[in-house]
Length: 309
Image 1 (tube, rainbow, N blue to C red):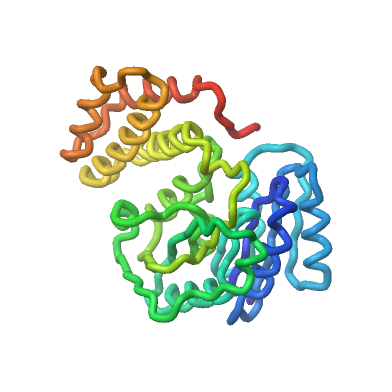
Image 2: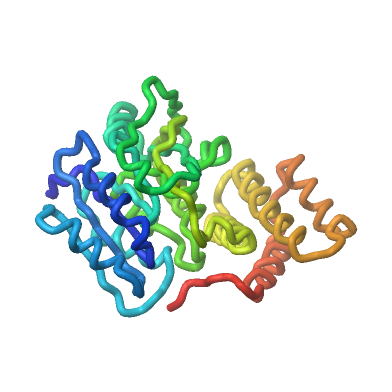
């Protein structure tokens, strides 16, 4: 059995500007006995891979996957998850900077509550990456344990690579849904359906430096991926309790409504508004025919990135 306590899985694509700072913080995480570092490159055209090789030279437990086909974030993060040998997995993009003690604190909370998932918050700092490499978490931050991980998903924000997840749960959940380009929504959903407990920390465990071309700024892409994450999850889990299905439906409808507001001149004159208001106010059960039609519309939308098989 592996003695690796935490496997870090990083997806990499053309982030040479950020990687020196990201790696400096990552490789200096405190309080870990035997960490593992997995890097999955999605055919970068800059010096990203060379920087990783240079900065991890002599570091134990390093795996670097140099792929020859660009397939997107979800595919690459699943490649890293499959290769991970640690008891827990912590994932990050190649422009995410971790406070130096963040993993140690997350691991401590996971063990304290015997929780399969630990989540923190993130902050867009507006700072240069070099300014963030010596950061620590604030003293006395608050946290809350939820025994019901699935319902907890609807009470707090669980996106953007802020998670530490037990490896066996993440692998059983099959990681990210590869039908969706961005993994932010699908990983917490899939894991929460299987997890025993989740801890939510009110502390910024991910520091986002000044951004340049990040996908978080592409709002239609986010609406597209958020909708499909909830749509596929509803389709894959029809056995869930009605209150959970109602909340999932509300998230899907909300994503579609945000999309409609961007692409239609007078969206307030459509039936979509009334369906959105009903889903938001009441626990409306999914209308699968309607959700299917909206999914078809999203899948035909132009200007969005999709997983390449």
